[in-house]
Image (tube, rainbow, N blue to C red):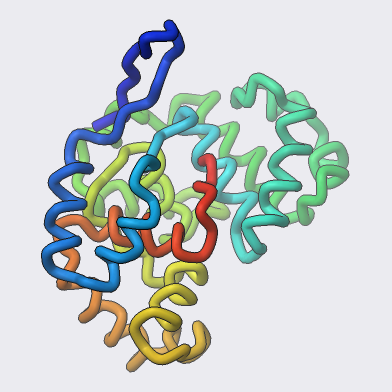
Amino acid sequence: MKTLARVSAAGTSVAVPPSFWPQAKRCLRATDPTLASVIARHPRIHLVSRGDGFATLARSIVGQQISVKAADSVWARVKERCPEMTPREMLGRRRSSLRACGLSERKAEYLRDLARHFAEGRIDIAQLASQPDEAVIACLTDIRGIGRWTAEMFLIFNLLRPDVLPLDDLGLLKAIGRLYFDGESTTALLRGSGREKVARLGARWAPYRSVATWYLWRSLDPVPVEY
């Protein structure tokens, strides 16, 4: 399910929300007063898929284990070297050129390996789109450099799946700690008992946990990340 676009009165293309977005907002506002407050503060923005499958996965690899600000900076430099952001273009860049963007040696290897998977037809986005969430995660995590978090970002930002709760996402845990658990640290929420608390909290947001996650990210940064 993709975000579509309509044409405004001025003749420009305007992204519209995923079809489930209005219903998700109503359900979340009704079941969670804290989320209702966050949603009210961001009335005119919504999840948008801004790239194809390769770009979404590449951007997620770049963003692994670094801040959003740092990831944005590195990604901007990667796009300068690969403006079309295609697998063939990525394979045409040396690892040293990618490392000069601020990537680690390992991430540069991961990006090139991802590009090879796409160039050789080992990843079929149309086929993935027809699979349930866990099957997509299982397929993607077979690729070097792609763990569950990266696969979950793909589900949210490319396939626009409505019910993903990325329990390893530091931004989500930071927001939950602030808003629901009296400032409890992300480190504590990553542990067994903390993860269980977050999962139980997230259960109240089903079947729209992606939407809840997206709004909790907005509570930290009102500008959406462009995957």
